[in-house]
Each structure stands twice: as C-alpha cells, then as structure tokens.
Image (tube, rainbow, N blue to C red):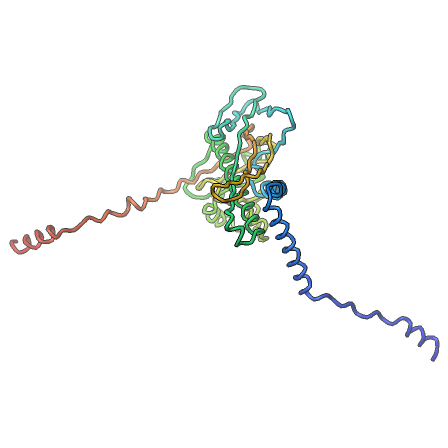
Length: 339
C-alpha cells in the first residue's frame, strides 16, 4: 500500500447527514400548541390572569390595525405625548374638515392658521360565554375575539375616514355613467399639477370589477395572500389599488401621500381591559382608543362618483297578492255569456 492509498483512506467523504422526518416537527408544533393552551387556561381561571392576557392582546391587535386600516393609510398617524395638544397647521387656501367629539358629525373650518382637532373614542366589547371555554378550543376563541375586535374598530375608523373624504371632495367630485380611462388619467394629471403624487386608490369590490375591465393591461395584479386579505389588489401607475366593503359603493377615491392629506392624532392608544359579566356567565374584554381625524389639504384628494341607475326595490317591483273570492271570475263569465 503506497502513501497515496493511505491519504485516500484518510480523506474519505463524510457520511450523508440524516434529515429529520417531518413528523418530529409536527409533534413539536403540537406540543407548543398544548403548552399555549395550558397557559391560556391558567390565565382565564383568575382575574389577574385575564388582565395579563388582555395586556398581551394589545400588540397583535395594534399590528393588525396598522396593517389593515384604511384610515391609517389615508391620514398620517400622530401619537400624542402626555400633555400635548392636537394642534395642526392647515393649508390657508383650503377648507379643513374634522370629526366632532361625538364621533359622528363633521366640522368645516375656514379660518386661517392653526386648528385644534377634536378627539373621540372608539370602543368595542368582546365577550365569550363560559360554556364555550369549557367545550371549545380556548386558543381559537381568543384569536377569533381578536379578529372580530380588529374588524369592528377598523370598520369604525374607515367609515369616518371616507365621510371626511366625501366632505372634502363634495365640491369638486366628478360624476360619470361608466368608468372612462381618459377621465381617470385626467384626474391623476390634475393632482400631479399640484406637485402631489397619487399614492392610493380606494373603491368597492363591485366597482373594482368594472375598473379592471378598463385597465386590464395597466394594472400590476397582486397574488400573495397577505396583501389580498387587507384589500390590496394591485398597482396602477405606481398607486396602490385597494378594494373593500368599507368603501362606499359607486365611489372611487384618489388620495395622495398621508402627510399631505391630513392627520390622525391618537391620545390614548389601543387599550384592552378585562370586562367580565357574571350575570351573563361570560368573560370578556373592553377595547377602546381615543383618536381624532382631520383633513387639512383637500387638494390632494379627488372623488369619482359612478351614477348608476337606481334599482327598483323588491317590495315595489312585485305587486302584492290579493285574496281571491271568486266574484270577479264569475262576473267575467256572466259578461261573456250575455255578450
């Protein structure tokens, strides 16, 4: 045996590594879910545990709101520090619009200078019966309560945001019977003349079906699931297209960058408190926040309203059925015989 054979024997290739079977990963995943289920069960058994569980729900719900809320994409979010006042400068030549302290009415401000944005509260109450906690999956119940709370707060914020956009664009909205690419391109051009770039376009899903027929060759469609879940359908000329049921039907909103549209001050960020109801034999959480909304520059907004023909309600289109006693039919027969 020469030295080359010895070297070859010493430098043998390492044995192939054994890849772990996928079953072990599934077992680990099941073990983690069981541990989480046990922790949630222990937390729900005491008031202090339910309070700690409510505190742990704040960050997931806040991340979902920041990711899916249209109002937080339209307006610039401004978390207020302790003692800070929601005072902002508006464009001198434009009218500012704010939500009143009751959270429903809209104020129109024409004076020059700074304005104070009123603050209001949005709240939601989530309760879970004790019977469901005994028989159901606690982890699934908690996640469902989170998602329902996010949907409720998101719907409230988006409804108020689009009401502000309607008030700010009521004097310059464009009405048309059907979607016209020439008119839409003209709207984008007019906004860019003010050195403002279109950042987002909001519409109802029914309007998006008509919209995509006219811009089929110009839209960069989105296919990933996470984007579709928040309503992001694609991009047109660099602007993101969003479609959701929270957008008023028959309307298309063109919005520039949030810092050029308005502000959304947040005095009390998302807060979750334990709200048990012994009478109803349920446990729950009270979710609330104190926010405000103000549209400070209406030059960065435009709205197109599709004037569709109004459908006849079903109650008016269908004639009511009257009780038949046979007298009309008998009179008709007598007229035929006598004639």
